[in-house]
Length: 183
Image (tube, rainbow, N blue to C red):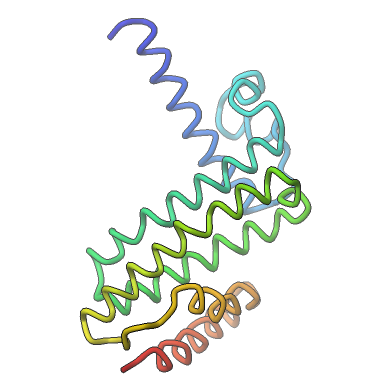
């Protein structure tokens, strides 16, 4: 492999590593510093700053990376589970993701952040539509349910508390919603 190609591959590998480590670190603490993220990733701060010159740049990329992973997970969920269970599992995953995003608070309120967050609606809506279509095809939910309505309805999930009591409440709320989706 030529030197330039190897360097590009290494840079891409570092970028992916930084995004994963940043996601995990920010899940644990929305206030995680860039230096702590670099240290946790086993890279120097200079490497992190070459990829993400500001905290906002990193946070926005972590957000976009999360949306990409979330929407890509629909295919895996549908391949591994019956459609209605895939819908349930995906919404539990979405709930965890939104909790992380909300934990970042003010960090995601700049004009650039609002643009990135607004741009995430179409792929998330398309993912929900795909799940609903699979459920309709399986006869598990009625046709004509609007994916935006489902997202709005299930936004209650990320307002539940963390821990076992919150997880039980998420299950109960999903049961109530899914019962309303049935034919």
